[in-house]
Image (tube, rainbow, N blue to C red):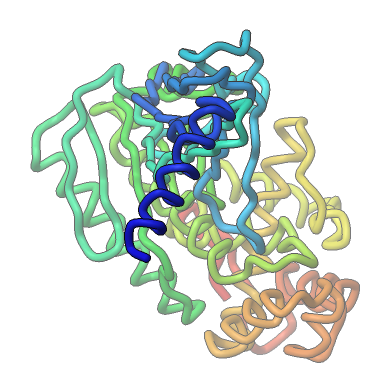
Length: 383
């Protein structure tokens, strides 16, 4: 009986051999040999892949995610064109001119998927590439949730700026109750020209910018313009924090509130803005709060008045109603409320009501009035 089974097994084996080698050889093996990413700041990130198989490779795709705040994890897919072969080396470039650019320090997660004619598939493990400005030798300093990067100036220079960061965060918390929720990066360029060189479509007047969805700020600060730089840090940092705590998929923060809070974080209102506000008070040429909900004018004089009024509107709300109400207002915007809806819920008046109350507050009262009216000085708006 044992002999009969052995003969049967041998017969089956030789039958398989006779039917052809395709039935007994190993399955095609698809192997990814190499995966890489190279940064050409600020223009592109180039991704590369090499793979091999014992049948033609027919499909190669790059998948990537840009790390930024949002409401869903968005994965982009790039199909790479190539000539099918058993060995392939391909590349694909994320062109910053096409997408509008990424800030220095942005993070991109990526992976490849590959398929061959035999139906085999392979994928690389997700990897991360930092879009670093490799034109400079950066140093770093971290305190709390903020990391400051700089390449010109000594450690005392960086520490002075970090002190400004921490003071601005504390001041913002004092009058709004909000705090930095996620880690932030601050890149200090040696001047505005270096900063603009890091951007794809810079404006010639750009001196600082907050990439709020990325948790990144970049500011050009020269050694002879340090005081301006400190105010710029407070301004851009406020934008970043406020956008972290109010981000929602429904509405944007009204511009007057966003810019007014940032101006308030700088400290007393700059004399130039005071002059614009005084001029508007003198001839009743205010811009309506309704208009200030939208992006400001590109005309310098109108833009300056817009910033000055925004500062004053925030000063009015904080002085008249306190920190708790401002904190509640920001959280109401986070819930997706409209500007009118948020103001009505927190303060009991809408945008037009705010306009009317603020004008009464900011306009000097007749001298016969017993209590002092508001006074505008070179160091800010006092009430």
